[in-house]
Image (cartoon, rainbow, N blue to C red; front, side, top):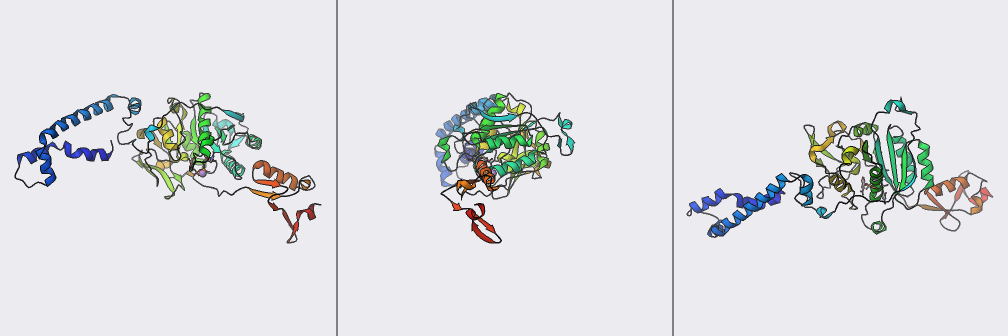
Length: 403
Ligand code: UGA
Ligand code: MN
């Protein structure tokens, strides 16, 4: 129950005060109190009724299980209120996504990780690292940088879910080259959300990855949502691998405070520090928690609704998280092991060059072709800025050099 409710009930529950007023009629009492005293019989009936209602609610609350309480809208935690922003109206349903797998590999072709042969890590639980990504000119560089972090992480399956209709074959080749076990899938954001501001970024993709985990009946390992543009400290992976239920830890460079994360007292998570609470019971960043798959498998309604800003909160609610279940990591949440870095995004540019010069007379044909395939630049015969080439500090039309 919220503190607002307590305030409303307080005067009614103070029977002693009430009796006091009746017993001492000559005492100087404020006008409002006097009026209350004059309708004391009706008030008593109200009190009785209110008492009965409180008794019934308390009885239900103490008797019913957490799930039943949630289903009846009685709230799920002792001091956590659900009465914000219509979050109660979100109906959790089992995920039913259609999976479109582009390519996948379960083979780990890496020989060494962090100076040890792969065989030394074989007993570790697998981390399922879910990366939503989307086509823009920074996509391939971002994924390359992320891959070079993940290359150091043993026992990891990388779920790369691309926010588009069609499989990007360049991405298939790239992912395959790293030698990290991976699944590349496509899962476009439903068109009705595309033009919304803000749009639910990376939700369709994460839902597809959750569906993949469900379809594979995975109950061993750890789930982590790792966006393509964050910065990950290698120590994060050893920390999240220990997750028994749900781990939490601070994320650096979030919003106004430059940080978002749990408040820990005596080794237990008791609250959260974040500059945007907005009624979220779990005001954490997507990169600020990890989930044990055996625990998650117990929740058939695991879901991530399309509700911008509330994805983390609603996901964590869908797996019945309670404060006492949270495992603080990163030296009791004193260290920052993941950073919410953001790459400056720029609109794709067009380079104008006649197609006759796009052959093998120079490197430019192959280079520009690659850029186009990676989605970094567009090449056109009649649009954009004519490709300039320079020699000895002098700008020349490309035709002069390439003819
Ligand atoms: C912040 C949080 O750090 C994210 O964990 C959270 O997913 C996101 O907000 C949100 O829910 O809106 P932010 O940097 O603002 O992240 O967002 P992006 O990094 O642009 O997007 C989050 C992820 O979704 C990225 O991995 C991105 O590649 C992907 N994404 C973004 C899509 O798949 N489709 C899009 O249209 C945009
Ligand atoms: Mn980001």
